[in-house]
Length: 74
Image 1 (cartoon, rainbow, N blue to C red):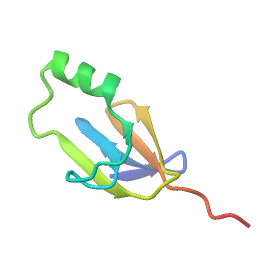
Image 2 (cartoon, helix red, strand yellow):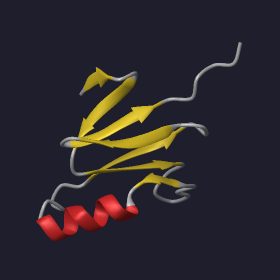
Image 3 (tube, rainbow, N blue to C red):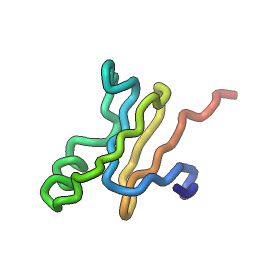
Image 4 (spheres, helix red, strand yellow):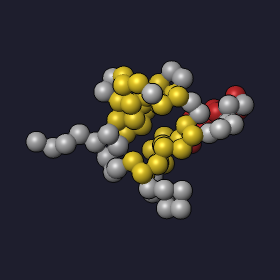
């Protein structure tokens, strides 16, 4: 993992969700990405980043995803 563009980089294959597996909340980054992962055969050892706070953004990056935590309000 590395910090890039103000986010934390996590390598593919990975899905980001708020909540947990039992109560997933929102999938922040997943449907299209997961479809791509499945069609490229990279679905083995799929990582799940859970317990992300509300307001988190997950965006695609080359080879993974950038996780942007919510910014504190001033």
